[in-house]
Image 1 (cartoon, rainbow, N blue to C red):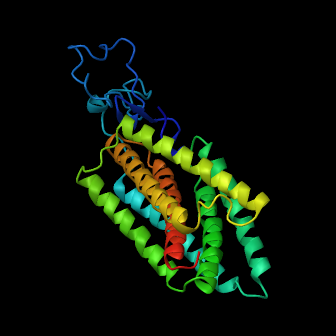
Image 2: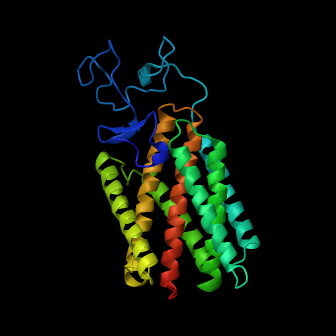
Image 3: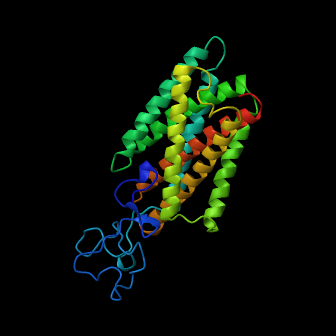
Length: 296
């Protein structure tokens, strides 16, 4: 089963035996998985595709493989994530200042925001289908996503509630910290069942939001009402919970990458996935607090 996050659905990442980890296929000529001759039979990561064998190829047994340089570390993930999130914040602030959402510039600002969102989507899709991370694509996605978030945040702050943006930022940080603590304490366990539930729920959520958008565009108003009023609050909470679940999946992928020797370049993919998830949570927080402020 492939990773729930498309940026991780590439060589090396999969889910086997009910847990998330790297692809693990038995090596030719080696003991069969699940037999008493194999001391790693119960380890879903016994075969590490990133560990070099004696013949110079990859796919040797993780515990028996020699240590190698250039593997992903937590410091790498933190540094790359700080770079991507810093780019998002910087371009968001610039967009807020340079693209004011007032009566004279509202059309222009919204047009630029929509264009930036589309460019960010294209860059994200291109990177997702590449076998190796391209830092320029990832940072480009972060920059254009920041422009979109800056304009949207400015509009919400101007026309709805000035304090909503701060509340959304604090809420996003709280969710990140809460999920990280819960994951480290093993209150959240990423299993195949957890993965399947999250993916099914996310697919249903996205389909409902698309349907609501289509009804809104062609029927006017707020479509099916999923993004305002009582239903809006309910779906906002569901969206935040889904974002928290995706954070847990992201943390699992990072943990597996560090533990089982993914290449250092994978830290860019980890940063990419975490950034997309945090953007999701922030947007849901922004909508939820806007509704709760009584200005939906």
